[in-house]
Amino acid sequence: MVSCSSIAENKSKSKVKINGVSYAASKVLIDSIDLTTIKNIDAGWIALMPYAFINEGGVQLNYNASWQWKGESLEGITREIKICHQLGLKVMLKPHVWISHGEYTGDFMLNSDSNWVKFENSYSEYMLEFAAIAEEQHAELFCIGTEWRLFVKERPAYWSKLIMDIRKVYTGKLTYASNWDEYTETPFWRELDFIGVNAYFPITKKENPTIEEVLQGWEPITEQLKSFSVEHEKPILFTEYGYRSIEGTTIEPWVSDTKAVVSMKEQSLALEGLYISNWKEDWLAGGFLWKWFNNENKPRDGNQLGFTPQKKPAQLVVKKYYEIED
Image 1 (cartoon, one colour):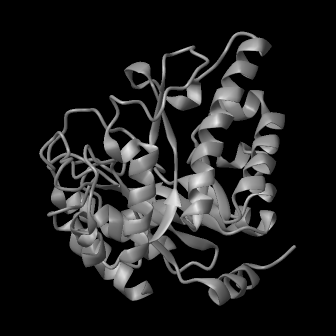
Image 2 (cartoon, rainbow, N blue to C red; image 1 turned 135 degrees about the horizontal axis):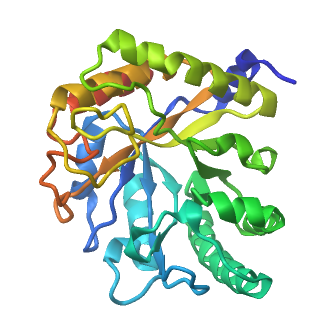
């Protein structure tokens, strides 16, 4: 077993903290000017997230289709990785699956072994095609999946094989994005380079908390993350983290589709609490802020209720802590 200090020492020899943003796919092919706002907050990493689509209970993924946004296509992702590298941004390629009607991927379940095999073949094809692009374009990190709670539980052998197959075509670092309430149950962390956690932990039980209450809410969570990292001898990466600019954003941070009262102050305070509690910890490799948009793909809510800190007071909070680490 290794200590947190050993993890930090090994990490510091190869890279600084991963200060990243999760980039919403673009409707059109982008150029470098679309990404300059990311550099303005001192982010050094970007997560590119091409989507595949499937009907609930379906077995065949659809991706790289003519009707999809250009930023989700094989051509678009290839172009975006090149532009990111030209701007000095490192890349995590993080393919996502969208289930019809926005169903949660963690609840995805199939009713027979034959259907699972068909779906796994389709999923592997999808992942391996983008892993090949990641290798060709020298993307620094590849994420093999996001929040597949039941899929991981029901088919663990498949995931170990998928990891081996991806490593045959991709030589960079690997992670998996587990949800905050399932990362301790994921069985294959020792086969990856980072323990990926989508860090939407419930922090408080009330609206308008103080910074002291937010920090107090983080204490047991931070301790558990630290212990888990030491036990598995792997650094933890917040594959997603963020808060909506609403009242009560720290109560259920994962909720994205409810009506609420705007609170720029609470979003800023929530992010400040996350950074103070975690960003200097040796066990944390860094994370990817959810979510960043370009001019062609503005958030549907007009930027007021959503997760993005763009053009909000929270943007200054992000910049403050990203500057410290850079």
